[in-house]
Length: 111
Length: 112
Image (tube, rainbow over all chains, first blue to last red; front, side):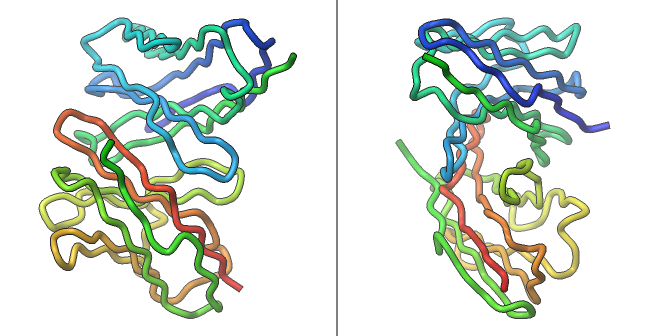
C-alpha cells in the first residue's frame, strides 16, 4: 500500500549531525522529497532526489537513497538551533498524481 | 524564487457555510494539489489537478469538496457545507516538469 514511515522524534546536540530516516513503498517513484515545517509555517522544500541517484549534497544537507531497501535519509551537518522543525519526506505515487507525506520527524536541538 | 500564493491566510466560518480557498500556482507549472493538515497531524493529500481535470483524489475529498481553475491562473478549493472537522490548514502546491513541488503558506480554516 501507500505508506511513508518516519520516526517521530530526534534530539541532537547543537553542532552535531542530524540524520532523519524515511522508508517508502513505491519502487517506481521518480523522485523523493524532503520538506521542513517550522511552527505555524508552511512546507518549505529543502531538497529532492531523483531515483537514479544514490546521493545528493546541498551545502549542509546530504540525501542518501537506498533503492534496494526503499530507504531515504536526510543528514544535516553542524545542526543549529534554526534547524529545529518538523521534517517530512514525501513520495509520489501514480505518476506523481498523488504525493504522500510521512508523519514527520520533530527535530529538537539541545545546547 | 517563484512562489505559490494562497488567500485568505485565515478564515473563520460557521458550520454549514460554503468556503472558497484560493491559490495562485507558479505560472509555468501544470500540476496542482491541495493538502490538508489538522493541527499537529499529518499532511494529508486531498486532490490533484492536471489539464483542467482532477487526476486523483483521496477518500477525504468527498462530494462536499470541489476544485476549479476558473481563469487559467487561480486554483480554488470549495467546501460546500463546512463541518467542524474541516477545521485545518489547507495547503496548495504546484509542481513543474522537473519535479520540484512548491507549497503555499497555507490557509487556516476555523469552523465554529
